[in-house]
Image (cartoon, rainbow, N blue to C red):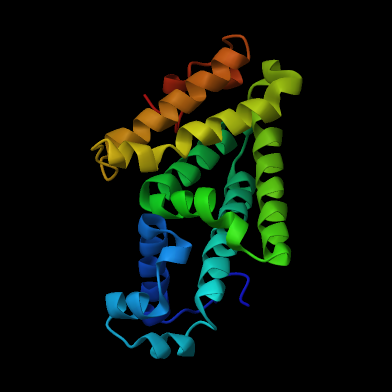
Length: 213
């Protein structure tokens, strides 16, 4: 069973992944058949097996793949940042892009993680823990006032950023850059408030380069 997207992926495989994510999120993993996914991408159900071993493999590919992607991209952004406040802005931008563009995967994770076999579920959890620890380190350095509450605050920020499926259901326009700016501003504001009102780097979040104004 593949653990993450292939380094070089065919357009057809990417299309199958997108449609599977959409259908699983809308109808539930158990409520969607292979034939239905095939129809959505214009090939026969059995034709899907040239790209995935089966429906279980699609789910594992989606959930493990996005966890790995977030971790890899998060590390890249942190490594490229000159300081903790800039790294935090970069982490926020990356996660917000994911939350706005891939809201179906957020729904899929919340509802369907239990359908993964134990080994794959453990892999997802391991990747997620590493991603959380990356954020905890950066947030703690950007907002020293968080102290021992940094981990709880990071989880709260994830809850805020991952609320995009509900925003869509309420009629929000996820493609609007204003939504990305709003989420960025709310997340920084929440961290600053939890740290006692001291913004990262000693400057107001909206006044920092890269900050949402």
